[in-house]
Length: 255
Length: 191
Length: 191
Image 1: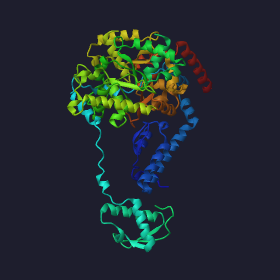
Image 2: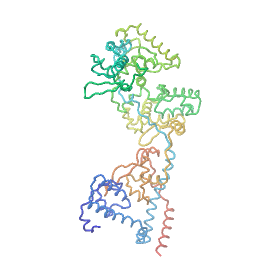
Image 3: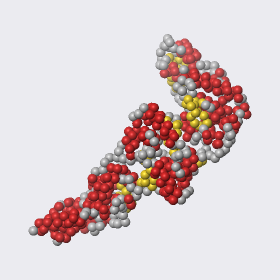
Image 4: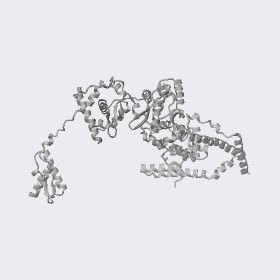
């Protein structure tokens, strides 16, 4: 343990506290307690320690000097508090007083306290009458939160304009781009299976049509052959040709 | 007021949403007929001449609402600033109701191609659309028509002043045909 | 009812909190006297014999509330429960806060003779007591006070409606009795 002189000379403990009875740096709290300006009864030492440990964890640094200083100060606070907890001292305090004076002070306290205890009784009666009352807690309807449009604010033609497009039969969807398609997936699968059966192996470039859309269908068919386990696909480099080789006999129900 | 009417008044006062009559009956442990009689008494009491609150029947049930002629005071009180522009979806739904009324929600959805539940609610809230009865088809769906504020908002003397749709390349006979098709659809759906 | 009473009714119906009379006057663009007369009319109208709603003056303003004898129906309907009862310790702490606010925890402990940390926490949790600032004394401790919820739950128009603390002072004979007992104790100890 460090000497008291060293403890005083050590840097102050930098800990900001936000306690119920106190808002400020830890050092100031200690000073105020020593000067009797804050009642140590009202200070939760455990809370201070918790805040300090959190601060240590947050900073990730362990400053031995500062932590020692903190431990010394907290120990002092705990000692003060535990001394006060001993009833003897409280008794002593009263016994120091003249018995009449002690009785007078106690009487004052009791009289003051009784007022509030009686007021609490009156509050209970009010609570029993009023606490179960039901007030309305409904949000204001949106309609009453908007400024309404004035009369004749909108032209009647707006209604006709809004309705007309809905009432016309929609034009038939344009399927011309589909009609041009010469291959279907089913047909293409059948064609590729035949080639696989005959040749055992072929390349994508060798069998694919020229049309982009049709090539896409051929590619889909390759993927289908692969996922059904009928063919193996190999590609030696990106964008290179795909070599397709037969793995199993075509399923009887295929197509 | 009848004791039951007082109890219903308290329930409607506290509830943030319209309450269906069967829930009212359940909460007060009474019959549907009792509730109907008490609601009649409430409706007579909460009429705009007598109160600043009125009893309204809206989708799904009954609710207490601020009387129309007190709405401006409430707006001044709440500091309402935002102007009430109708979105295209609201305008479209309102147009369907205005030209085809009386019309069911399913028919509106049929014309617009999308569910119009939100738009109908918003229009009802504005008093532009209201429930005008029930269709004589299976399930007796609610029929909607334009409300009392509708004509004012569009500066129309009556519904006959709606611009003819011919101007927009659609003849009156075509509109009739569409209406007939809608009703046929509705009946088919109901079967 | 008076036209102004109808308008106030609409405002009170819509407002989620009690409305002070001057705000009512401002919203309706009328004088305080007009508002007072209209509130009288409203109070006469919304009496428990006539309606399921009543007019109440609480927490600094006027508000509509469910009539007491309809509250059980409403609770059954909404499933809302009564607030939990307050223990004697909570009521006593609340009394100290209400009469002395703004007050620090140390001052409360001084009056009650015991630490009131738990009681204060429980009262804060229930929204009956709130932190209202920090004292300008060493350590700047938290100051506690009561809020709108306290006034509502205890049916008070404002803190001024609390009965004066002097009313709860002990009678002269009670004080004499305590004094005699204390003297006897002190003398016994001194021997």
